[in-house]
Length: 190
Image (cartoon, rainbow, N blue to C red):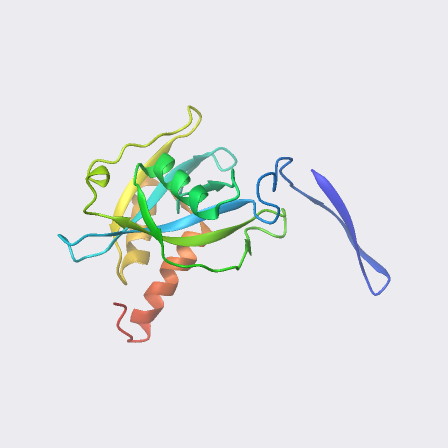
């Protein structure tokens, strides 16, 4: 726990406590974490799929649906993304589809943690992706779900959450709600 006193125009506004990871930014001076939207593309199946995980999170004492991701452990953002994808889902990433310099803060009211959200293409024709095997730490419990990547994705997430009593991460829900907005406005998604 750290604390900071905030002054605006010479007036003390608040003495605020926040969480900070001691190992934060050890490998990459500006970035704590990377997460990804893993999309499976295959020549055999023209319907795109997206991989999401249900990760057990002790602070809420339940599984939460989220995108795969984790702490940055090397300088290369791409290497971190591919490593986390393989560990958490078993899938081998093929390429990063977006190259943004934007770093997002995850929960700025209570921590300084930040990260990048990458869109990762998975080659569905690659033999290694036919029967993916996770490589989890002994303390991790992660369930993998492969879902249709379409305008109904937000409804699929809601149904999965209700069926299994999963929480849903803000990042995942916001992303899928954005996709659903196309349909709500009568705009074709794909």
